Image (cartoon, rainbow, N blue to C red):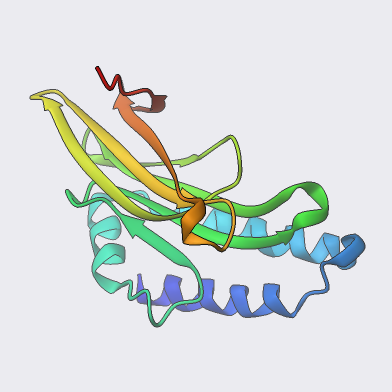
Length: 161
């Protein structure tokens, strides 16, 4: 996984060198983002995921990777430079289910996630609280919740009553 992280860092450097205003260099920007997405989605085994979690150091990598406190759910977030398309942040979730790793895009407003907390609702259901922001300001934090239901990632709501 260290090699994968090094390649992702190289792609992030290339991405940051691209000209984003007015969709300049858009084809190359989209290509780099797709390479990054494919590399992340190729993490398919629990062992590879665990190795990725253990190898990732937020201070040494060019993108964000947040992992839940139970170690079963993680989200890569990065600035895509596709602002002209309304996609300024991309993220890919990886989660453990049925002894394997599943990759999923997180839809809705583009967000950079920086903290994930897991909470067991009962023996069979865990809810993941993802804290993130659609801007650089931490004061703009938003909390989203997800569960893994029948192997699929499902956005959920928590009743505060």
